Length: 264
Image (cartoon, rainbow, N blue to C red; front, top):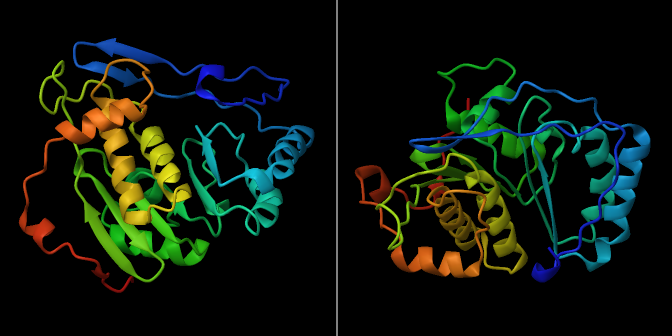
């Protein structure tokens, strides 16, 4: 990663990290179900992680917490770090999925990006009939979030704000000269690309609407290319120039920023 100007600080752990498996079939790349669950990091490792981040806090424009749910970004780590980071770091974003999701410990974040399935799993009484608006608004209030972006695969996203606003955002499928129009060939990478690009936008003071739009564009670019290719600026520029504009629907036409329905 030296050629990208990135610094990596790796902290050894006692146990080996799980291997994530991807299968290639005629439709593209899909993720294999995760069954492994490692032991959470010991207090010493948590302390070293917290110290490494806190030591650099005054040099940071933002911090992104991302974990595949194996327990590295634990509530203990967040509880120790957030009081130190929040006063000095302008942007905090995150997404933690999997069997050890720690979203409920991410208080006061500028942006969280859970899937609808992850959000429903956090509910005290998960139900497919529960209103997404109810769950989203509740999480914004309880965690004192600035913005919550709930992703729904091909159905796009729903963004909730702390001022009670709700906005539907259709998915953005892009194409290039070498790809079939709008064809999704990889089910993996979209969420990571969305979080990374949206966080970058917030750090650059683009505002949440433009930052989320940038994130959606990066997500669409990620799933229309085979393999774990990085979504760089050239890829984003190409995707932006060739993106397929979604057809306006009746729901889209009424989709101005407006107060959401009261949550139950």
